[in-house]
Image 1 (cartoon, rainbow, N blue to C red):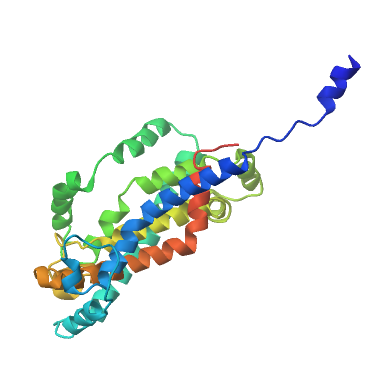
Image 2 (spheres, rainbow, N blue to C red; image 1 turned 60 degrees about the vertical axis):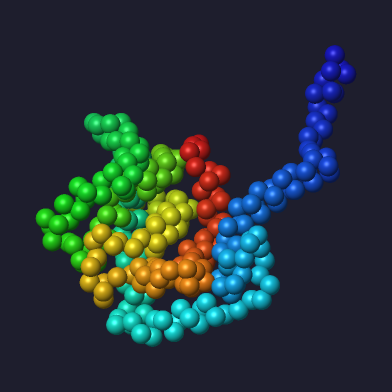
Length: 291
């Protein structure tokens, strides 16, 4: 009996992978990371390829004679535009920033009662949010155009911003994170006299920072790459992706310019992701986990 008691008191041996197991896992993750980064690297390489290397057969991954001619040609083309390139850039920044910030606020406000409060019909509304994620943009594009036409939003900034605000993915993501907040903390804030607005602003939003930073990345990327050609017809309201795509869509001779355009449009979302990547990792690792 004494031996069994001492055996239970003896600390258990720590289970860990061997050096070979760690090396195999590292190599596996390295291959997966390289495979994921391969399209981005290849796009950057193509931007510095001369036209003769873009259509060489068999195709080569690396560039032999790197050149900046694709970027020079792109910037020389924008000199002849009727609308300055700064105007397109301003439109893209304005639409992306406003739509992203407003959508985060609306999504978090809509998710707050679904995650914190109890009321009749809560389960139905929660399931409706999940069901709405199944609808792709192509399904609602025609009804959406008719609604905005009736509301006189066509050919305005609102036609690029309002469709972003009706997405249900942000509501679902924020609700999942808000549901993991301890109820005791919410009740303590209410006992101290804080209302729902104060709790949402001072308690809930700081605790779900990884969630809304992740939503910030996804929303900004979606809005930044959206050309909105079905709603915008005035040249001075078009965004930078629209202008760059039109400049590069002039045949095979503009293939190098198109590669340069792809790199330029890739930079803002990539930079934003690099800045907030730690919060994205935290979101993916803790999503759906409750106390």
